[in-house]
Image 1: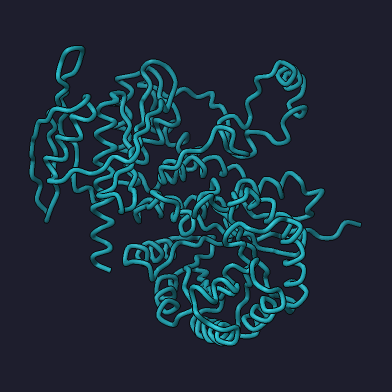
Image 2: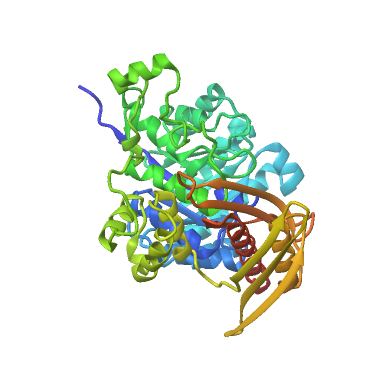
Length: 515
């Protein structure tokens, strides 16, 4: 008789660790959009941010906490009373709040960063967990850089944290240093030393490409919570990919004998959403969600798949929500068809003004024969992410060609202090896009460094929409901020992307000044 399958808790930290990817900062509206999707796909725990980091982070965590129906909402806090109190203030309105506090335990961190002895680390751990437990019933403790910590000391710290009230003990491979054979033994020793009823969690980074492998071997060794991110985004080389963890557990139940609560048909929409809002592209050969994940070019593969898909596919595209739609959307389509397609793409249509979206849809449909999913999602994103637009494109005219000095005239709507001002400027540049950016720079009174510029077609055919992604920064030392713009006119898309990045930068600066 088979033993009863145990459910693995999926802890998604896309909005916290994932957002720490360079250039991936998201505003509150964007974080909420992702959080609502994670909630609908039944992610067990959403780590929404680091509330002490800034006023913007605090407000984002609080907004996510108040809006989730299924998922527990968690905030991260250093092992300091001020951090923990701030975290609790942010998550306390959640249906299922959690405080996640951490302290480094490895020799290198104790010496170089904390300047603490083992005894001091132990004392601060207990004090932090006890205070967090006085505020919240659900407390998680992480021993930062656990995998480079002496095993006896690690067991001593996590045992003390559990005794102080932590219900979840997290063992992070903070710098992605550990190999699966090592991690397996660490988790077994931690599981053996902790009392029954304590959840053992893991949080693996991908510096050596082992994040998913380490996470899965930890599950086999007794861990019952996996911390991961959509598309594996995160610090440096990123985190364990949620889609890889979930689909490994689902596809290989014969090996793991575990279940997950995740609605897997929402994985692909989640991946697309996070990619669009974070500005981080998905590599074509990315496992599970990459563009080529279900494509077959070799003749022998194609022959096999035509006979039986199982010859070369171990899961179906439909199982992750990637499917071909028979319904064609165009200028004769009605609202009901659009609503149903959006729902199928994982969009909460209750959060969208369908009248406004329908007008935008018709305007686009007049320019092209068929509207594809990515184009429809772009229209939806414009509404779901529309918040605090300081600058808006009102008009663009460019001139360029052989033996012609490229020039651009740009008119902006500037929304400040409840007033709308219209300004227009012209500029010349190395090309029409550069001329546009120089004209916008004149209008806003500053020029930014263009750190990256990417363009791609987001649908098929010569009349497809082009999507431009840019990354801007104020100077060589500042962080990069991304912006996206889409249009059938690539010059317009470029200008929209630039202005979107400027708006994000202005909003981020304002939030930090308030903090």
